[in-house]
Length: 508
Image 1 (cartoon, rainbow, N blue to C red):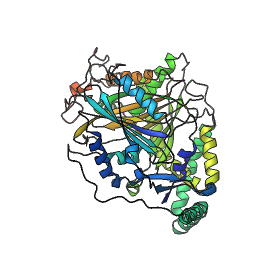
Image 2: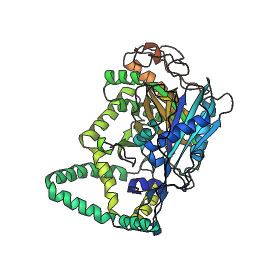
Image 3: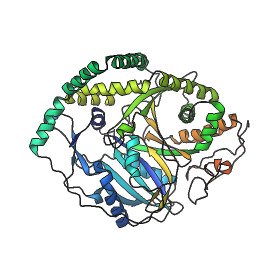
Image 4: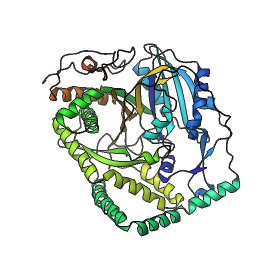
């Protein structure tokens, strides 16, 4: 058994009729799809590398301790690995509708908190895997680590065999009661740990406390300021919309080299452009206005490798949607992110999350429900960026062509964006509340238009990025990549080969 951390448990507590704490994404592979029996054997053989996938949540009696992960003695892989197919023509509209529908459904708390949907009938003779995992199980980084256990770096078509039979570890009522007592007294353990640290390294601890205080106090003052009313905030329903966009990672790096900043700064500017276009299309006044985005960042280090618990902190960015000039928006975001690094904002955020462990589990659960279900106007949107591998991966010998992320909604935030980079491209997945955000495609069109604008400002003459609502994003960047970059392959079905040219970008 292993106890959930307070942060992991908070993702269980925030769920309601209209909030599902599901994260994941869509992986699109070249065809043909393997048989379902072959995939079952493959996943079964790999589960020893991901034991959490056979575990379910066990709550403690009377809620006195944090829940624990325990082996599911009735684990049935066939329940979790499912198969479906898109209606013809199997394009973006059909796939995005399926993602929205599947992600809108709560996971069964009495079983391990994940589902993989094998999706046949994707256009261009491709197939997909829709992964759906509860945020209590994993954060964005560890979610990728689990998925990567199924993937190979070479096109290996052989199916591995399970090395030994799996037998669940059965927890007795006495063990559960003991774990409950340990959870109840967890705050005392943390106090003893903190006291030990004070004795062993008082100077270092004092410096850390000072850095945290200097960072947290300004954040607290900023968050206390209520935002102007915007259509991005308000009640959300139980259903989700999802749409997507893709840009070349090499193009993002070209912009970074020409205009300054980091890859993450450029990506945030593209999200800012998309949200700016959305609010303008809705007729909202943007003069000198900013949107406050919660930006989860990983604080996972080599020491945390192999652990699945959430290791995330949070920083806040003021997205300058009221600024016309994209270069000025990028410079603004660059300055904000540099300030976060200089003040160790992410580390301070992690410290605050750790402080939650000092509270009794029952009170922590009540606090999580209150904080994340209560209507608020302090945060307008969420933008989370997870870096992925820059080399091709394979499942059952089929190449992974595209990797699209999905992020959950909570509280009164109606739109959130997830970003994932893989094999030369940056993939954006935008989640919207079904009822209040029917126009989320405006954001993805704005992202691709923003990429064209930034390239033009960088002096790159290139056909503009274009968007088709009936198929996947096409990028025009592949015509000018290197052998190792986005133009290095013409694999059928990849974004590299699905290129549309339009008029050359102006301003080069």
